[in-house]
Amino acid sequence: MKKPLLLIFFILLVDQVLKIWIKMNFTLGQEYNLLGDWCRLHFIENEGMAFGMAFGGDVGKILLTVFRVVLSVFVFLYLVNIIRRKERKLVVYSFTLIFAGAVGNVIDSLFYGLVFSESTYFSVAEFLPSEGGYASFGLGKVVDMFYFPLIDTVLPQSWPVFGGMHIEFFNAIFNFSDAAITIGLFMLIFSLFIKKNASDKELEKEIISDKICL
Image (cartoon, rainbow, N blue to C red; front, top):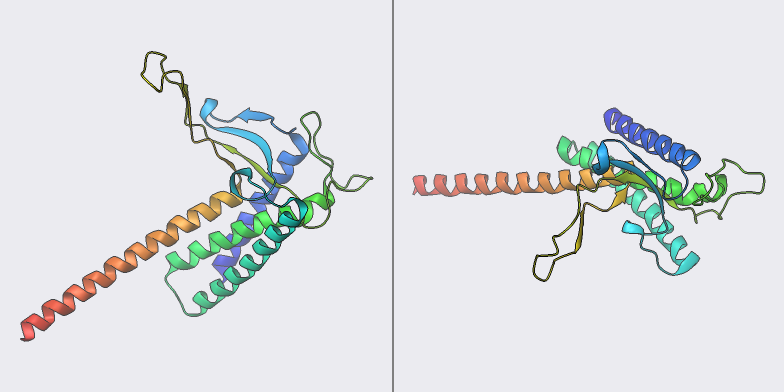
């Protein structure tokens, strides 16, 4: 249990340090090139679901936050259960990453509206402003900053149909918690693939063994 807990602590620490630093030093839309144009820090705030989608105003936001909290609790309980069952490490660490990432974004939703002033395109946020935060408990916005537009080009005008079209890949802007969740999901899918292959091989051995016995 110690190593998964340390990993959770590490992810939450890095995630929150990055978010607080961005929140207090970047204006909305401000960006900084880390490695040329394809690897940037670009500050936006996520109003709701993935890719900035939102629904139902404040009520929808509260429902989404409650859903995130409940889901995080269930993932944590399942994580504790599979650790006690001594499940494979790949599965344990995949759920560890998913849980830590979910909690990282829940923290933003629950508390950032209380402790920060509003970020704008002209001013950075202030921590614990005298006039109070920009939103009530549970209505905070999730801070996103990683932007990797690996392809950002305009197709030649001479091309039929698609000529002049702007192509951008990868255009999602995400945070450290999102990355942890994504990696955790890929690890989980990979673990299921390995388990299926192992089961197929075991079944094949049993069939061969039965044929030999016959």
